[in-house]
Length: 144
Length: 115
Image (cartoon, rainbow over all chains, first blue to last red; front, side, top):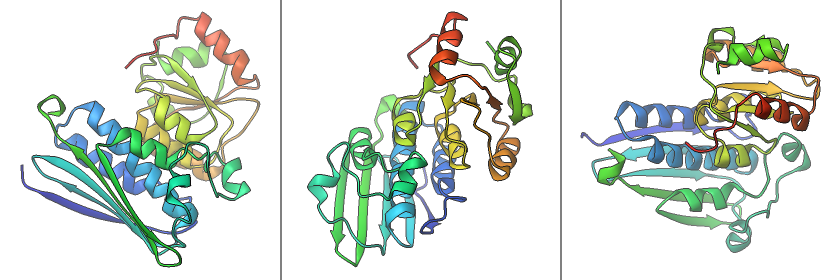
């Protein structure tokens, strides 16, 4: 397999286009012939991280890197940063505004879902600078 | 069971996404928290929700949901309808609550839980 690198822009508060990058990532992974389980996990992680940027993060870039060994989804944004990463990793903890909660976002499941559905997650975040997530998945024989 | 059969059997109005009416339905999921639906729905589910904004289509596409039923009389906005038509994901409408409709769908045999 040739290595693939794609990137998609994420705009703050843009709920009209939110999710489109994740859908493109899913379609790319499907076109590579990967199995539905790993595509499901990568889709969930891409969507959750994309929506986090839309809700909290300012402007951002969602990127996909795939080669024979694995998938990496990177999400960078120039938003306010995560105040307390340990709290943000707890299910049910959210700092989302009420409006977003009414829309069904901000349930405090985003980062926990990413952790559950990936092989590893690294989170770098600095107040008022932004957040950088690296989400990785190994591609095993069962995934092909 | 096809989405079309569910629409007919339960007399549901079709709001958008007609070209997807022949999709097969395997089980269903009720949920208004999008992360919960992302995490727990399965491919082929019919999804019962009160959320009617355009992002429900992103969830449906990512999780390969066969169709969406807006319950409690909720209506999709124009952008949601346009996207459902573009993607061929049926949006059906029901005045019933998620509880009532899910019970009826379950009794009609839409039960499979695993992918």
